[in-house]
Amino acid sequence: MSFTPDPAFEFDLLVIGAGSGGVRAARMAGQRGARVAVVESGPLGGTCVNVGCVPKKLYSYAAEFADAFEQSRGFGWQLAGTPRFDWATLKTNRALEITRLNGIYGNLLAGAGVELVRGHATLTGPHEATVNGRTLRAKHVLVATGGTPRVPDIPGRELVVTSNEMFDLPEFPQRLVVVGGGYIASEFASIFNGLGAQVTQLHRGEQLLTGFDGDVRRFIAAEMRKAGVDVRLGAQVASVARAGGALAVTLANGEVLPADTVLYATGRVPHTQGLGLEALGVALGDGGGIAVNADYRSSVPSIHAIGDVTARVQLTPVALAEGMVLVDHLFGPRAGKPRREMDYAFIPTAVFTHPNIGTVGFTEEQAREKFGQITVFRADFKALKHTLSGSGERTLMKLVVDAASDRVVGLHMVGAEAGEIVQGFAVALRAGATKAVFDSTIGIHPTAAEEFVTMREPVA
Ligand code: NDP
Image (cartoon, rainbow, N blue to C red; front, top):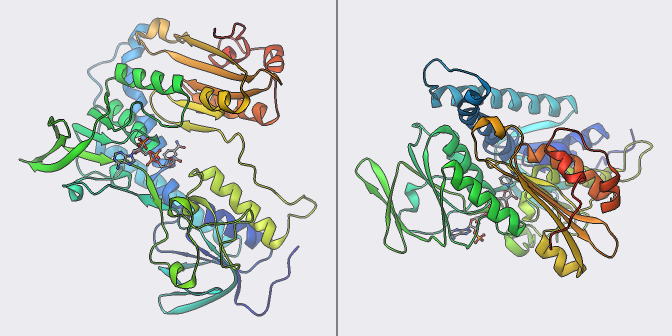
């Protein structure tokens, strides 16, 4: 054991929220010898496990079968009858799997000696919280309460759903209107389009996915339209109302869209309400998240925060990494290992649209601003599979190189398995690989990924 518990407190660490970040921090602290309690009122695993990454990816797989059935004909398959999708089966199987994962999270906490306290925690002091009348005192407190969807105040707001409800809609929506142009909106638009819904995606901006590389944004919008999503840009919703047994979405230009379900995916807000933070003087920062320093400490020194509640990078693997860095900081590093540090540079990310987006590093626009002189390499092609599949889907790959150092500072892909492919290249970018290193790397043939090491001619 590398850490000596403080006898002045019942617990060394009190974690509020058993999502990705909270569970990881609790487990690691428990393994380090700390006495840890985690408070959670909902199912274990937080947004990612219950209503985020995991069910989303399962539904994304479900949606991909539609293309697979269609495309199999070009490879000689004959399907007896038309494949039919059953929403109830997908929901049931997803729920079973998520329940299994909830159980695994519980076992992981128990295995690390962490006490799970069921209920809602209210902070009543810098070292103290109450849960169902019980007072828990801890030397360190970690707030890892995540975030919740934000729906703007439009007439008919009460009629729309958020990503929290999408996985369990009682009826499969034949007509789905998705509002938003970010990660969640674009992923759900693709998924429900694949599952057979008629999907209209309304985004207020000029192009989907603000902040992504310009070529990626144009390319994915074109691919999603090709796949059947009615992507409308510069579209503002005026109101949502009941219309017969369905809904009617009225746009600012007066057009009315009928819908069975209206999904609002217009961003998420940090979950800071009702925790007693204001009374303790815990300062909030930009975006309403808990403001923390480099050691995840809030303005109240004993209270820390990681993950979505800090309103910075809203990604599960970032919350996990932050949790581990915090535990090293509070309880010392693992035996024989250096203390972990968090580095926010070159965080890879994927958007599970159809086709997927994978990206790491600077967009062309950001790189031009930061490095001045850059070289861009780009390939836009039809994947080998689609020579027989009959699909018109195309793949985009792009490298952004700092001309002065030859370092590859941005790598972007739209295409099948982009997330899987970009994860590996993220290691190379973090290691500082130059374009010369990419060029000297032998490709794996025939793959789409090999294109990243065979791009010779820069874009003019
Ligand atoms: P995003 O911030 O990605 O997107 C929000 C979208 O809603 C933007 O298109 C934004 O437009 C639009 N919007 C915001 N306010 C309004 C409004 N009042 N009216 C109309 N449109 C509005 O948020 P998401 O909710 O999609 O996702 C939250 C975060 O969760 C992501 O940023 C990401 O970090 C994480 N996430 C990651 C995933 C992954 O890794 N695959 C999957 C899902 C979520 P504009 O661009 O004009 O501001």
